Structures are given as structure tokens and as C-alpha cells.
Amino acid sequence: MGFWGRKFVLCWVLVCASLCAMVASADALRLSDARIRLPLPGQTTAVVYMQLHNQAAQALTIRGVEVEGAGASELHQHVHRDGMMRMRRLEQISVASGQQLAFESGSYHIMAFRMEVSTRLATQDDHSYTVTLILDSGQRVSTEAKVMTL
Ligand SMILES: [Cu+2]
Image (cartoon, rainbow, N blue to C red; front, top):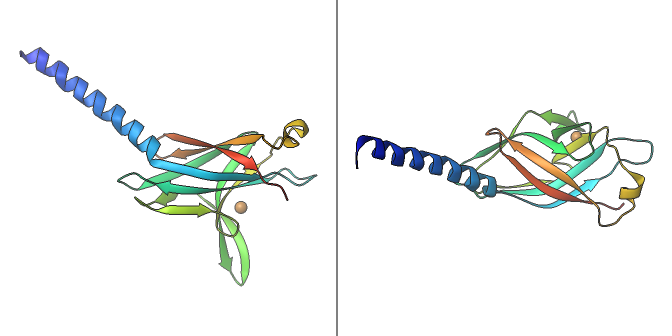
């Protein structure tokens, strides 16, 4: 194989390696049991809960979130301070390799602001809202959040 032939092969190996890495880590963050609590009448803020499992060999960092129908969405955490439960916005959440993380009431959660809830969709039991986590690599991992009933 000549010089250019070798260069060509090397090039393909690099392309393949980067594509494979993308596919692998997109698959590696498993999202399950996603639920959304829609705003109460007269309010516009929704909350999303889910289970995360990092099945990648390396830690993953979540840098952002998008919720279908929301004007803005944030990663949040509840913290105890001065004997009060407060919540704060998180710029990012790191999930170690193999770690499972519960987004649930009183812990990590996703807040969706300025939610546009269609009355027609909200009354459909089977309607779900797409929730997308954005990793620091720019990769996006989506799941469908089922509507929680009170
Ligand atoms: Cu919050």
C-alpha cells in the first residue's frame, strides 16, 4: 500500500472511531420512567422527574435540558438550608460511569417554565412531552415524559 493509500485508511479509521464514540455515548445515558407534572390552573411551571443511568465507561456531564412546550427549562436540585427546603439551579450535573441518579421530588428535578399546555393535549391520557438532556459534548438524549395525574 502506498503513502496515499495508507493515509486513506488512517482517515477512515479516525472517522469510524469518532462516529462509533458518538453512537456509543449517546446510547450510554439511559433515561427511563420520565414523568411531567403539568402546571396547575393559572400557573405555567411544570416539573419533570426521571431515572438516569450512565452506562458509559466514562463520566458524563449534563449541561442543559429542553422540555417540549416550555419557554425555558432548567436543571434544579433541592437543598436544605436554614431548616428550609429550597431549590437552586444547577449549571451542570455530572454522572459517574455506572451511576444511577433519580430525578425525583425533593432531589434533582427539571423545571420547565412558561409551559404552553394545550388543553386538548393535556386531557389526553396518552400524550407525552419530549424531554431532551444536552451533554457537554453537545450530544442530545431524549425521552418521552408521561403526564402525571394528581
Ligand atoms: Cu426547581
